[in-house]
Length: 490
Image (cartoon, rainbow, N blue to C red; front, side, top):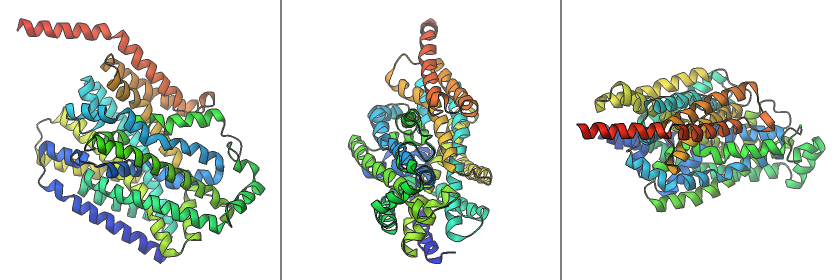
């Protein structure tokens, strides 16, 4: 066990717990709708800097800080180029959703993305399908994060994987259950700052340990010339695949529930504009440099078999132990901030979108509080059990979840905002086609037409939304006329 590293990391976790306990004060006196607003949205009071940092920390997850550099270590500069498609993430989300989404969310009194869909489409089946997809796909995403956290603790402490996973699970569950969204947003801000600083320090130290960029490039070229090309170590990163990846981690991120919920939590337009600028700059800096560190680590630490261990191993190799602990708080921060957001999202889908809407609408605020805390705890335990058998590279688990959520939600959200002709039948068809086609393509036709698995399902779900909405337009109009006639006759 590297004691100085562990001590630094423990101090960071203690700070996170302190913020969680402090944030929980706002929940003590909250009741009914105000409790739901506070617990799941932080009272819609996020300023520009906090909004930017919470989006970055939520999106910059274990796959960005553990899995991404791990793949870059094995693939070379091709994966660095591919990862840069993520720079536009915050820009696209806030530009496309932005004011209109926040206005509509407030009009529908929406606390979650599913609340917005319920208000927009007035359909029980749209709500239940959305809740089902969030629970299924976000379990994969959460499992990926928990695997990343456990691998990090395992690498630092020498503990076995299961013990490391247990420590991580307890740490996250305590402060999410206690603090809710406000704890998440405030800790995300701390974590975003740590990520930025940790990335810069580790990049400089890695370049120095490798003898400078020229020396590192020469070593990479001598080992495998493909490592310094856009096509990956084995030449498998085709231009078609790389450009299609931009859809997965760039444009279609608009459909990720954990990101879209941020677009309904900011305080005012000024906060949103500030977050747009800060978020784009910080995401670009972190994504580029974290993946460069993964590539630059290859000549310094050759032969690492599990790519997910590259980041903790290179930090301990090139930095003094106490500084390595602080820097490794960055990937730990990324993982914790994503897990807390996903936990709240799935919890809100169960409590707010299914239980309160369709099972017990008149539940007392005390019962809602107990349900919120209890469901969050149960979900955490289930993810812990799922994460006991981790994949070799957790990024694939995370990207599977990303693709599924995007194929489900992107068109009901975006076209629901900008096309009045979209209706509940089109939304439901889009979601079902998106889920089913994504699972089929992912399992049976991977890299269809040389593209990422998410591209074809997103196209099919778009066609389904538009086609079914147009075909059922007259049906919706007839229902509206019949309803008006019935009201007049009464």
